[in-house]
Image (cartoon, rainbow, N blue to C red; front, side, top):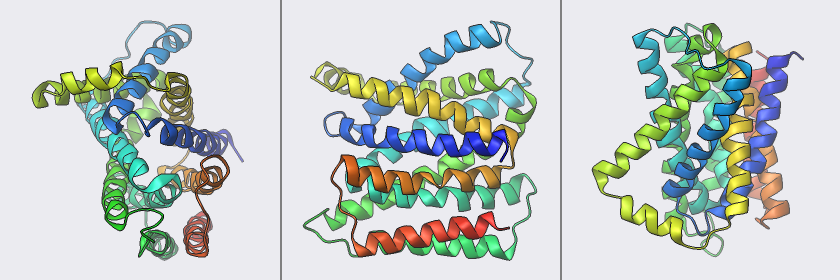
Length: 293
């Protein structure tokens, strides 16, 4: 196993732990505010990292590359992460982890369309298995555990988040391979942060955001989760995409599902019933099938 595979698997483990901490933080801090803080915190952490590794000289990006980086940040960070955190609050870490298994099939599909990666029958079988796992976990959930309407809304937000996240990373795959890695990550995060600030200005959400930030919050947990999710896991995640094919990296990232479900049971007390175990088995089976290609 090379460095690309190592980075992709490590990202899955770190992200899973961050998701559990975000779930706890989301009990008091709304999804948009949590995502805004996460992105700003990660953005600040990347500045000294770039100074040490690359210095202040901005690489010679073309105007098209800069546009794609900012668009990727808006889609994959401002939109996708906010929707993901909404789904996390609505249906819990375990179910959200299962829905996020759609990330790999989406990346494979988009990579086939835009990057010319060939989609083979085994990958379609893996896609079907992952979809079946999502339905197994979310269909006819008991109201005593999570409200059915909330689960359905959570699934919509979760699927939308995963698709926009996949689109965001596929559109910068070639830039990651040819340009400065850290600068690419930073500019992408700037795009996400700017997108969220524009949303606040246009929607006049400043007062709401300010009020939520002024309330007592578990800031220690929020900061640690942001360090893991918006800095450490993000660097590992994009490093995997830089070094290996997008389809392979996305499949390895799917192992975060197992980590999330386990940690949700261990740290949050979310139950693991037969239906959820069956769904987890189907999704992991789909990942294994895609890995065998």
